[in-house]
Amino acid sequence: MTALLRGSALVRSYGPTPALRGVDIDVGEGEIVAVTGPSGCGKSTLLHCLSAILRVDSGQVCYRDQDLGDWSEAARSKLRRTRFGVLFQFGQLVSELTAAENVALPLLLAGSGRREARRTALYWLERFGVGALADKRPGEMSGGQQQRCAVARAMATEPEVLFADEPTGALDVLSGEQVLAEILHEARAQHMAVVLVTHEARIAAYADREVMLRDGVVDPSGLGLKVTR
Amino acid sequence: MSTPHVLLGLLAAGPRHGYDLKKAHDERLPQAKPLAYGQVYATLGRLERDGLVEQTGHDQEAGPERTSYALTEAGRAQLDEWLSQVEAPAPYVTSTLFSKVVVSLLAADVDRASDYLTAQRAAHLQRMRELTAVKTRRGTPVGDVVAADYAIAHLDADLQWLQTTQVRVADLHRVVHP
Image (tube, rainbow over all chains, first blue to last red):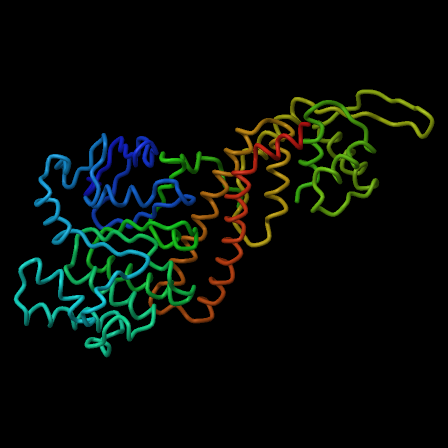
């Protein structure tokens, strides 16, 4: 499998504090990869570097074999708007806009017409079970409903890669798992790759495989020991 | 839990007699049911019959005669094999997992215990992945979903334990080898 996204020897520090100390990671097309590890292990930083939000200090992030380090800020920003979708623990919806306007926003930024953007937004809100809330503002919704809107917004541009940082962290166990199952069902149907950051094994079990970080490096896992059955 | 393997592990540091083994077992594995003397001697008998331990001597200081046992080469190999196998991920295997960590520390070192924990974690997560796939498949009967939820919750508890033990393994080593 050729990697859609490849991070090689990624190093990133915040001032004197190293967050990534040489991480290698591949994400194939349509692959769902969980990035796990304890708090402070560097998993959110890795997600920000892979999704072209942060630049690395050294190492390479390649998207379709192109080194994103060589890209201008404008080109990276366009890539994020058109090919990447990002979903955080708290939906980060714009509180002054309605659900439909929130979902339409990235489509408008990507050049869709107003009517087309609204139609697509309504489709995705419906798809994630919050179609009836299209004209409500975030303040009028529950946390779970807001998160569903955020999911609709992240999916509406039909990205090639969805980056999700603890996407169920703000929800109760059952709602969280339902939302996640719906996201991944949709991702698989569209052959969308997903980088899923989580500290919970239960959530990581939704992915095809796991990359575990510890202190800014990949923790080798599964040493080929036999399982007794 | 596998009493024969735990006894082999306790003999890894050198010969001991049955009374000593029972005491060491109950002290090192406080969560396990205390071993009865009869069980210790019966197990030693079977291990001797299978060539995994051998008698190394008798001593009698103010009491009944005591026979010391030592690991044979075959016994050490058998122990090594046990420590190299991860347990089939299933609910309620924690006490075996715990025994394996302690015996790894007794018979080997922190790296051995840590490698075991890492491999066991991978096996547990793989099983959880399989159960999650069953659970999220469209059309899975709700009874199967509920059963998968149950198994996942228990595996998740074990996984959390495996992760925290990975962090504590060096401390545990200092207790096991004072």
